Every structure is written in structure tokens, then in C-alpha cells.
Amino acid sequence: MTLRPLVAALLLCASELPAAIDGYVLNPQTQARIPQIEVAFYIRQDDGQVSEILRKRTDGEGRFSFSGPFVQNGLKFALAAFYDGVPYFSSTLEAGAQQQIILEVYETTADASGLDIGAHHLFLSLREGTIECIQLLQIRNALDRTYAGQGSDRERRVAEFALPPELFNLQGHSGLMHQAEPGRFFDNQPLPPGQSQLSFSFELDARQFDGDYVHQVIYPTERLTVFLDPPTIEVGPPFVDQGTVELHDRQYRRVEIQSLQPGQKVEIPLPHSRSLRWSLKWAALAGAFAALGGALALGRGQPQTASSPAPGDRRHVIAEIARLDDEYAQRPDDPAYRQRRALLVREAIALTRALEE
Image (cartoon, rainbow, N blue to C red; front, side):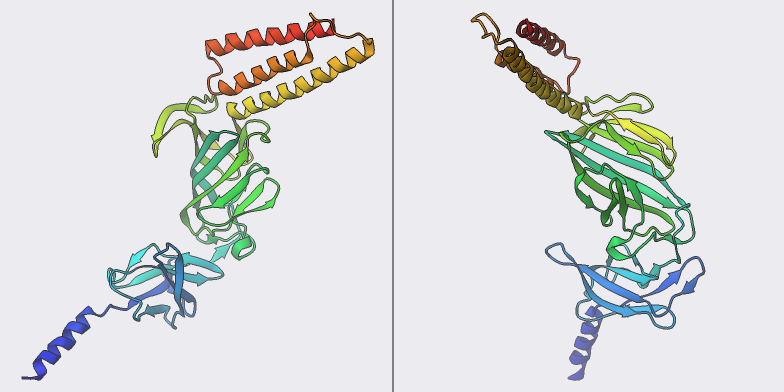
């Protein structure tokens, strides 16, 4: 009689013990299980950091098993199998929610001929003096091997992108991005057969950015969709305007182009950067006019009369034109702006002629 409560307690404890996390590693192309390769166990800490807890090798039949006090029912975790120098990660899993886990791995290749892009999303947001760029894309590998590119680890060169060489604050959100040479960038995430998601972001200094944003195609692209902020930006053919959309409480002008081929370039006009260039142009002209006025005065050796305009008057008018261009950068067709600007330009011309005379 005295043993029954003890047996019941032992059975209760056994039922509450977390089950081991079991599985195996498989090459789905050959259906062969892969022995003697490393499998790592990851969990997310309270501070959001992902930490590797343990790493084991598969047995002769490609099996692995993780158990211990750190494995509690309901624990969120992920696994990664390391095969031929490439990590293959699982999705986020929950302890006790599945009986067996299968990790798929593939042979590798350096042949990029099977790569294409189904959908490429490009976000361009214009801020004061800065162009913010985010790129999200679905890249497909039609081969039966993982495209691993060249190199290894952090310096591995996998998916290639042609980006403005003057960019800064480059951040890879799916892998690590790095620059191989000016304008040539690589993501380091190997691409297994099927579809992978890639994303990265960077910024441009609009004061140093000369010209429209140019998107250069590296891989065949089924569809390029550009989201422009502010939505007042207008882009003509070959883009098709799809109107404005709201994403994450922000409005964008959405334009799209399809069937892009490697080497093709498409230009996206950014009036914000053009406005800044006009400001710099007017500032340079103001300096040149001032220097010209000084040279004319020295050459003639004649002082200005009380009724003659001063170079400072003209510089003031030119500065006002530049300020007006900035104010109406997103509304270049505003009637009040065009009328005011025309008056200021005529005034600047008249002041210039008066100084020369």
C-alpha cells in the first residue's frame, strides 16, 4: 500500500519530462541520409539574441538527438545542419510539438546559371538630404544543388548586386552584405534549390548622389516593383504606374516593370536629388557671378554709384531661387511656385546685366 503513491508520483514525473528532440539529415535529391555531419541547436535568449546551446554529429544512419534540462516542452528553438561548408537552417520549432525532424541538405555548385528573380521590391524614400533604400527579393535556384558562390563564411560571394558605390549604412537582413569592388556587392547566404528570400538596406547622401537612381539587372527578373515615398513622384515609361498604396502607415507611389534581362538598366527619377543639385548649381553660379563682378570692377577701375546694384543683391535673389526650389521640390508644377520663380529669374538676369553695364 505504501508503494502505490510513490509509483504514482514517479509516473507523474515521467509524464512531465520533456521528450528528446530527434531527427535525421537527408539529401532529398538522392534520398540518402547523411552520416557524421554537425547539427547545432539554437534558442533565442530573453534579450533577443540567438545562441547556440549544443552541437552534435549525426550517427552512421544520419540521426541526431538532443535532450537535457535545457529542453523543456514549449521551448522555441531552431536547428542547423552543416554540410559541405554550408549551413542549412530549420524554421522555428517548438519542443514537444513534433515527433521527428528532417533537415534537408544538398550538394553545392558554383554555377549561377539557374538563378533568376521572381519578384524584386525596391523602396526609395526621400528624406532631407538622404535617400533611404530597401530591397526585398525572391530569388530562385532552378538547379538541384545549392548555389554556394565563391569563398566561405563572412566573405562568401553568393547573390550579386550592382549598387551605387557611394552608399553608406549597408545592412544585410537575410545574410551579410559586403562590397567586392566599387559598385559590386554580394550577399553571403547560400541558395538551396527552390526559392529564397533576400533583403538589405542602405542610404545615399542626396548631395553627393549625381543623377537618377539606376537599377542594374544581374539576374533575369520577372517583375521589378518600385515603391516611391513621397507618392507625388511621377515615373514614366517603361514603368507602369499602379497608383498609390499604403504600407505600414506610409503612402507610396507604386510603379512596375516586367521581364528584365541581365545587363539591363532602368532609371528612376528622383526630383529630390535633382532639387539639391539645382541648389548647388545656383550657389556655384552666385560665387562665379560675384567673382566676375569683382573682376569687372577692378578692370574698369570705376567705383559703383549709389544707384548701381551690388553683387550681394544678386546673390540674395539667387539664394532665394534655390530656397524656393527646395520648398517646392515635390510640387514642381505648382502655379504659384512657377510664377514666383520666373519673376526671381528675371530679376537675377536684370541685376547681372546692370552690373555688367
